[in-house]
Image 1 (cartoon, rainbow, N blue to C red):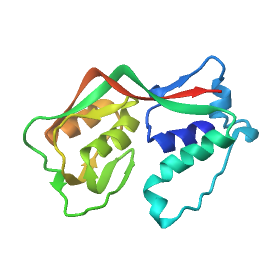
Image 2: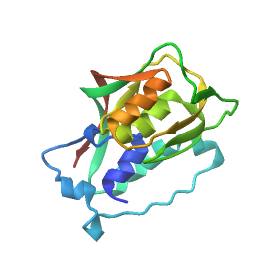
Image 3: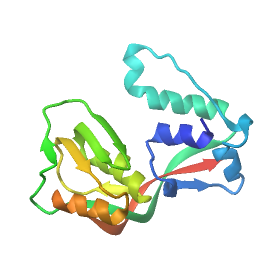
Length: 181
């Protein structure tokens, strides 16, 4: 993986708009796919009682061994806000599952036990190329099956609207990965 991919995983960031670079760091050092010396592989063994802190432990290791460091900052930027119309969630069923499982492609999204904040962050952010912030007020877990006939933003927005959800462009303060040396 590149430095970028490792830190995006650790910080659970899904949009390339949430990346910033200090003047001492070149993008090439962070992305590094064409440079084989810029790719890394990391395995970690942790005690069972440490499994809930794995991202913190991984972050500590990354900052100790990688030539480029990163930290999270907050920044106000353009986002989409996911909102609920108040009815119509035919493809979003309250789930009995207490764990999350999902998958998506250009044809849509299918998940069980999914929180809408994770649906927004993992799927919608990927499809819309901007961070998506969940402001639906719906805190439950859902089984979601969203089929998209054509992979474009309008088709996705129409599918969401049929399920009582809509997207609104706004500005919000969101986490941003800041790369430095």
